Image 1 (cartoon, helix red, strand yellow):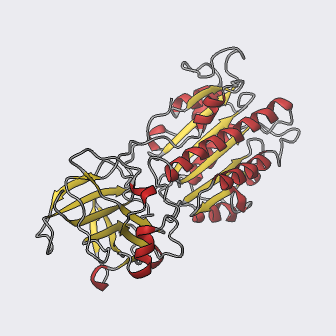
Image 2 (cartoon, rainbow, N blue to C red):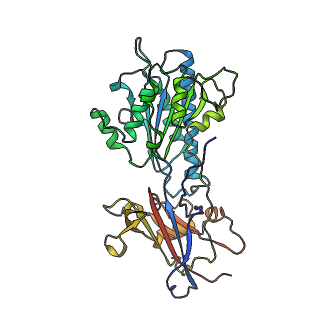
Image 3 (cartoon, one colour):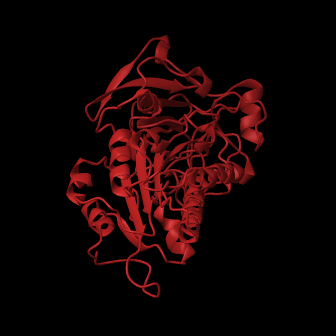
Length: 413
């Protein structure tokens, strides 16, 4: 039903994307047999904006649909949790598990100035965290459930979910300028490279006359945009998914933007659970032809750098610093990025990183770990070796950048 996200994630500590390159580099250091590198895209799928345009009628049917939309959101949040803790993330409790999600509730019958309820109005509509727990997902869902029922349609208000959806989408994708201070503040608070998801859920058709004026051009939408429309399509006993759009305005809009089309009477929780799911990516392990060379003090002869879009500096809280003590810039795919080196842990931090799963009070940085719960998670072939690199804190937590790992290697057993 949902296509896989076209991303490749660099989860190198215990799980890593199988999209890096392995190239021999310059002369290895003393005691090493070779030098190998891994170069991978560093992206984060949990930075997003979710637009919910849900029927605000004061009816039992609309109230039930609002509950379905909230449950759909909660199921989608499980997908984000899986990225952080599952096969494409890391089960390491000492690593940041970051969420940067914002939900905007779009009221389809309200005047323009009252249409949007944003995290600036209600801070609990944002999930911004480095811990990413199910309890946090529950709290966001509870806030959204409350927000969906806060303002219901008043008598005489026109019902225009498509117009409300287009205005909201155009605003958060920077396709239109803000019209007041509230919209300006919202735009200023949004990441410019986040993915956008929109769910329109309605018990009735839109009342606007001209759908073509309310439909964003699919080609103009950001690449990372997914849409779903649930509405009064067909009889209640029909299948949940609509493959051939009918004559309603909602279906015409959905067809124009290639949205998933679902009958609002659908009771299949699995279907609802996929509408706001972030998608899937293929992930694999970092298995190399030779093991990393590790000195007697536990430090590896590795250099790890991050090429990232913040030109202002290297964030020390992530264990980043300027290579050779001065700013360094590189160009990747036509974009100028600042290169930061990742600190290798030392002393007590190194020992805890190598031996303790929780790594209490460890500074951000990396080590080659021996923690059984982490190393045992990956299985390489008989002729390959796992690179058990562990990244503490925010050492590999970034957006739209690249991670470069170069290590001296030891002789294979």
